[in-house]
Image 1 (cartoon, rainbow, N blue to C red):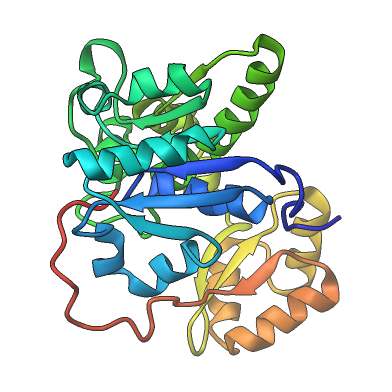
Image 2: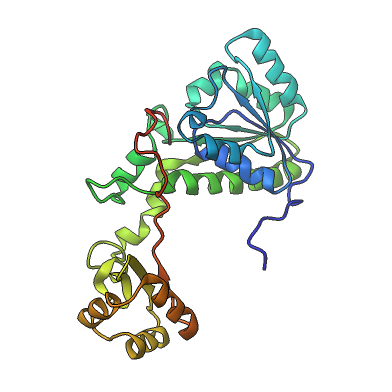
Length: 292
């Protein structure tokens, strides 16, 4: 089974995205990879993501048309309206008040579009600001003072936006009218934190270091990740490396990560070398305060 999306799944669907930063652009890129024709409309200042992660930005917009428009200017707003008239989906990531102020709700109704809104909060909190870090903080998925390596709320929010788009297109076909779908990142964070809430991943929990067969161990030149939870994997690990945590710590330290990874493959044990994907990242980060 292929791990890549069907490049024709939404062929012929036109998407106009006004979203900047992460969740919206990630969703737009995913839809483009599924065959949608995506136009990314950016403010004159551009997408902040381009400033902090130009390579990622370039990757995301590779198959999209990028158009700078000042939506506060009548000329820019008119140009957007022309594009919306030929589209099927409008993807946004702004506060509801901004959506209304720009007249976008009326445009969605006028053109019978699927509106997919990515927002931070819903209902009475819908105008509150938030970012991936703050959503994670509230749901208990941070380990202070460390910062998260992956903005997973943004990433999962993007996938929800894709799902919302597909659901909205289906509803639009049956109803023959405009459809409004909302993706709430605070809700995404809540569901993503289920493993923590149900006692699986906190320090000492089953997936948080409580099992010697599921953890990270130092090797002679780095670290390996071991995921031998199932009994048959655990037995193979015990026979080849060690049974107790003390035995595993001592044995793993005697060989290289590559050695243990090779052994894992040969014995069919989930055991891989830990890669440091941060290697090569500039020491001085780009000042940026609006991502996520």
